[in-house]
Amino acid sequence: MRRLISITALLAVGAVMLVMLFAGVFKLAALDQTAIAFAAFDAFSLPESVAATIALVLSGVEILIALTWAMDRVRRPGVQFAAIFLLALFILILTIQLRYSNPPDCACLGLLQKFQAFAADARGELKRVWWLFAIIAAGTLVQHFIGEPEQKAAPS
Image 1: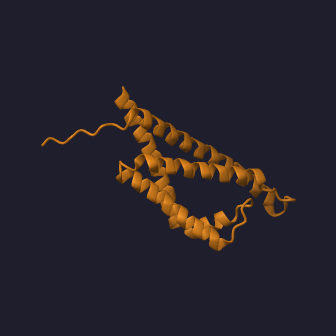
Image 2: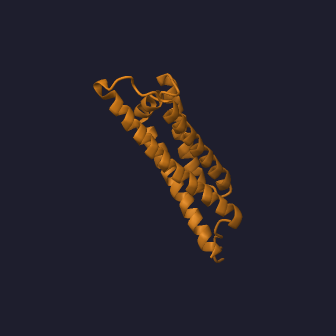
Image 3: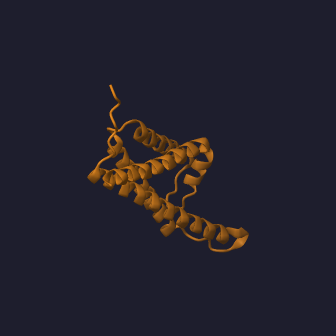
C-alpha cells in the first residue's frame, strides 16, 4: 500500500512538473506576448524591457525546475520546494493583481467588459494554480514521509 501511495505521489508531482515544463516552453516560444502580458499588470507597472527580462528568466526557471526534477533524483526534493515557491509566488501576484486592479471609469469601447473578462480569467487561473500547488505540496509531503518508490536493482 505504501508503494502505491508513493507511486501515486510521484506521478502527481510529475504531472505538475510536466505542466511547468510546457508553461516555460510556451512562454519562451511567445516571449513577446508574454512580456506584453507581464507589462500590462496594473498592480505592478513594469517597463516592457523589464517585463521581457522577467518573462525570459521565468521561462528558463520553469524549464530548469522541470528538467532537473526529471533527471536528478538526488535534487528532486529541493526542486519540488522550488516549484512550490514559484507557484506560491504566482498565486500571490495574481491575488494582488485581482485585489488592486482598478476597473475603468466608463464602459466605453468595451473597457469594462474587458476588465470583467480579465478578472474572470484571473480567478479561473488562480483556481488552477491552487490545484497545482495542492497537488505538488501533497505529493511532496507524501514523498517526505513515505519516501519515493524504490527502484529495483538490475540483475547482475
